[in-house]
Amino acid sequence: MLEETLKTIKESEAAAARIIQAAEKERVHLINQAKQQAQNILAETEQAAQTKTAEILTVARAEAAAEQRKIEGDCQEALTAIRQKAAANFAAARQACQL
Picture (cartoon, rainbow, N blue to C red):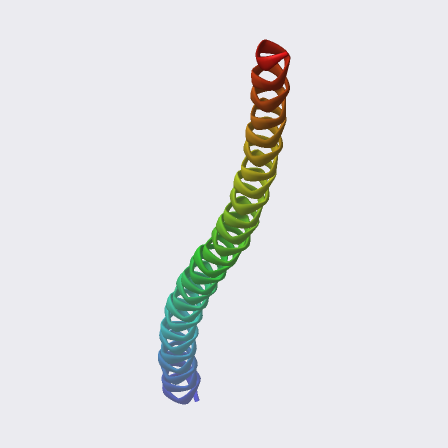
């Protein structure tokens, strides 16, 4: 009877050790899985940030180019108006000198 009890205790201890070992293995697996998921999320976040940054830069460049074209157009109009005014003033001065 005592031998059977000792045998049962040893078997229970061995079973408990196997359960603990399996639980530890599962814990390590879950930790590694969580680390991998975190790395994947970080990589996706970094990629999304790079994509969004590229989109923002593209829009900003397009807006800057449009603004530059507008300014160049405004300057060209002003230059044309100045030339026309100068030509008119020159013509008026020439006419005044001929009088």
